[in-house]
Amino acid sequence: MDRTKNLGRCVAIAALLALVFIEFAAHRSIPFMMDDLWYGTNLVSGQPLRDFGDIVESMAWHFDNWGGRVITHGMLQLTLMSGEWWADVINLAATLLLTALVCAVIGKRSLSAFLLIHTMIFAWNPNVKMSMLWQAGAANYVYSSVWILLFLLPYLKALEDPEKKAMRGVCFWILPAGLFAGCSNENMGPTCFLAAVGVMAYQIWQKEKKHLPWMGIGAGGALIGSLFVILAPGNFVRSEYVARQGLFGRMFSMLTAAADFLLPSALAAAVLLALGVSMGLPWEKKQTVLLAAAVLSYGAMVLSPHYPDRAAFGTMILCIALAAHAIFRLTEQNPKGERWLRLAAVSLWLSAVGRLLLEISYVKPV
Image (cartoon, rainbow, N blue to C red; front, side):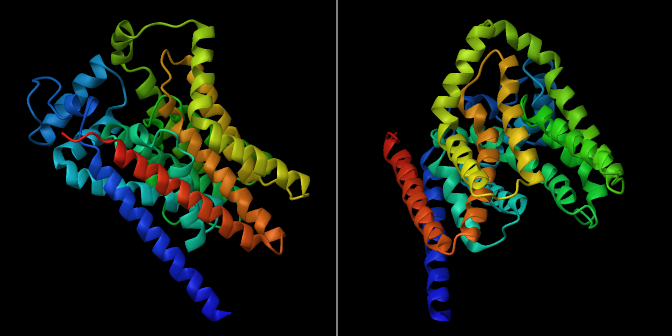
C-alpha cells in the first residue's frame, strides 16, 4: 500500500512539474503586445518607463483620463518594466499562488487537490492566451483573482468555524486586502464587498459577533476600492470612445461571453453541485457564498458597456472552486471515489497540456 501511495505521489509530482514547465514555455512564447506596448510607456510623456516615478505619474493620468484600475495597471507597468523574462516568472508564480488559494478556500491542502485545480484553470479556460499569457490579461485577471481569494478566505474560514480565529493577524492585513480586492475590476470589487456584508449579516443573525470588527474593516476597504474604480473621472472620459449599447445589447454580449468562456466551468459546477444534492450531501455555507459571488460577479457586468469574454475569469475561478469542492466531497462519499478522481485528473491534465501546446504552436515567428 505504501509503495502504491508513493508511486502515485511521484506520478502526481511529475505531472505537475511537466505542466508547470509547459506553462512557462507558453508564457515565454507570448511577447509583450497590444496594450502592453502602451502601458510600457509613461502615459503622460509617451517615453519608455524608467522608474517608479513614471508609474506614479502614469497612474495619476490614468485615473483622470482612462479609468480607476490604477492598482492593477500599476502592477502591470511594474512587470512590464521588469522585462519579459521576469514578467513570465511572476505570472507563473501568480498562477501557482492562485491555485494554492483555491485549495485553501475549499479546505483541501494536498498534492492531488493542487494538481487537479491547477489543471482545471487551464483545461476550462477557453481563452488562455488573452486572460493568462498576455501580460495585460495576467495583471487584470490572474493577479486580481489572487487578491480576491486572499480577501474572501478569512471570511469563509470564520463562517465555517466561528469559534476559532479566522487567520493569524487578519486585523492587520484585511484592510489592504479589501482595498486591493475592491480595486481589482468593476464586477469583482462590488462582489467582494457584498460577499463580506453577507457573511457579516449571517454572523449577526447567528449572534456571533467576535469577528465583526475585522470583517467590517475589510468590507469597508472593499467598498472604498470599488468606488475608487467605478467613480474614477477617467471612466467618463473613456466612455466617449466606447460604442454604447442598450440593455438588450449588453445582455446579449453577456450571454455570448458566458457561452464562449464560462460554459465549461459553470456547467461542471452546476452538474457536480446537483449531483451532490441528489446524493443527500448537506449544503455548506461556503457553497452559498461562492455560488452567490459567482452569480453576482457575472450579473454585475450588465452595467458595463463592453464585455470581453476574458472579463469572466474571476467568475470562472469561483466556479472552479465550487466544482473542485464538490468533486472532493463526492469522492469521499464513494468508496471508489479515488479512482474517479484520478481519472478526472488525468483527463483534465491532458486537456490543459493540449491547450497550452496549442497556444505555443499558434505563435507566429517574428
